[in-house]
Image (cartoon, rainbow, N blue to C red; front, side, top):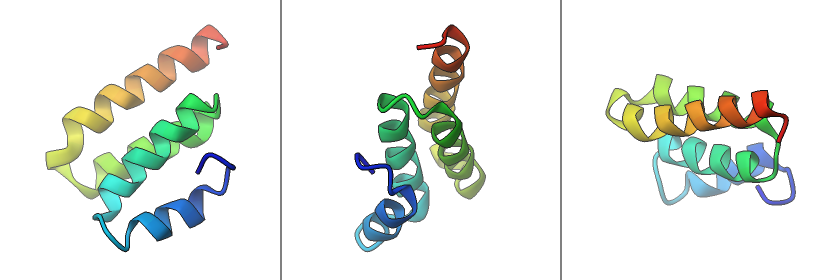
Length: 72
């Protein structure tokens, strides 16, 4: 994910964690890289896949949206 290969990162992570966890984690890395469009996409996927994961992914999604708007 740090190299921008998000799909591969999710696929690799899914060998040890559920897809919603992998999506949230990859989204977080995308956000740290400043790739907010992709970060938002992965956070939304995590939320869609698991309502139980909603709180963490939703907080990350809001942060990514704020930072994207701020032009960070």
